[in-house]
Length: 406
Image (cartoon, rainbow, N blue to C red):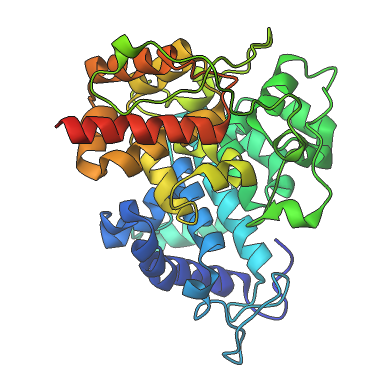
């Protein structure tokens, strides 16, 4: 954060915190259901302590700029369009975003590495009252040298990281950053910003002395969505993308009264690109990790296959409600990739409706029901080589058959 530009730094920080805790939280509560359920006084701290929730808030902010227009104003009460222009608080939007990202990272580092977190509001410690003689003795005596407390693990890591915690796309990366050593970050310096996906950070952690090349980024600004730049592998043409093939009918014995579909056989490849369970599951394995799908959901091919694709916050909330067993079954049994998994789940939600979707896919879920769907998917050759439209079509027709049967 740069110097305070003619105003007291602490006053600026207080203004920013008041805005975040007030109008920003109020606006987010209209866009992110989880915010609405939080106690008003502790909502901001809860968001800062939850990387997944903070990421969804940034997605809501990026996806709904008009909802925040009344907040993004300068000292003349005029809307600010440039992220580098000064806001009413005395900082630019870019600087406020960096402040939030740094705060979230510091709290996450402290919680993971030191076992604690610090609230935004701390009560000043009261000094014990001393009589006149005690005060005079203290003035005349030689002060004891200050005891220098050694820095904690989280402080050492944050100190080398803080200058590179700048962007909202880094929020899902904070848990990965937490596992890097200060020495690795110090050696890389600003180059750490070239590593924009979790797998890149994991590869870096595995061989810090020989930093691997980061995933190439797309240079075309048209492919940058909502403040995020897509990795090249999400926008490059997919060689050998399967097309609809006719001629082979799936096993009718698995129909279970569902709608009949015929996709035929898709060519298989020896390369297995299924989603990594470590990436998509929460640490306790009970749910899907919504922020794992952040970059995938920016892929135009994925968005075109998703129902209600414009509702980004809603989509991430639904993905985060899916029980871990359902995710494991879809990945292990069908070999689905990240994009295919997202399309499968969201198509099921659209076809089933909220209540029945939560019964089947939520916690604790219905493994027996999932097993039936997976067996049917296998019979219709749904797997890693299926196109996204094929998966969406299969799920929609399958669950439509289930609805008709019930």
